Image 1 (cartoon, rainbow, N blue to C red):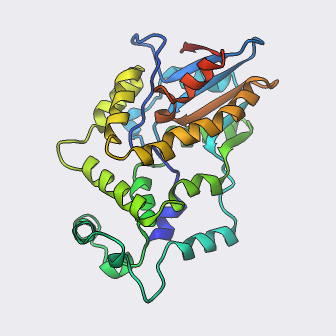
Image 2: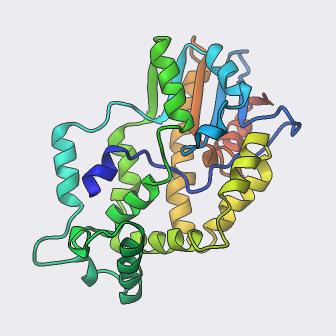
Length: 288
């Protein structure tokens, strides 16, 4: 089960959000033209990783930024893991035969998982009872992605137009955001995922509407609030990665090519977002 989920895994923010809108009219989108002191520009886009066919076409700004760029940059590269790395990851996702998940979770959390799998996929307990909490979290978060996400669409266009694709993180670095968590950290993140899935609290439609309209600040507020009780996970998922990306994005800004940098939109906004960090370094933004 885990191997099947891993094959399609692209790590996502639970809410796709954007922030710091320079304008917020009917034509605004989560795409910005970023200008440096030397006059060079790149484009920065916020992605939604899971979309439906009815969500297309994308806002026109995505195709404009793509057409004006010669290189596409995503969160992680498209190379994936080597067979040896994948084998090692799959092995590390399970407890030894003399141990099980039940020994590492609060009994109430384990019972919820049992009922969740029975209700949603009718998956026998034996198929997941030895998985570590981070492996379950990875699987649950992978359900937020699909073949119609922004990255998939732009990847298809890039390949058709022979535009190079790069990543701000290697596949290994990308996965370590989750695989490096302790059992306790992953358990708390699982609880947060359960809470967001509770009937009456799903904000997916609102998030999508706000993303499409470029209503950035409201979405950034939603994201911060969703992790209010889990600040260490928010730090790991959003803030730390943003800081690691800034030097790489600046190299693109100082390079000769025009690049379209596309990351989960939750990384763009807020006081610790990519946009705020670049603004503090003197870069200008124009929302498209």
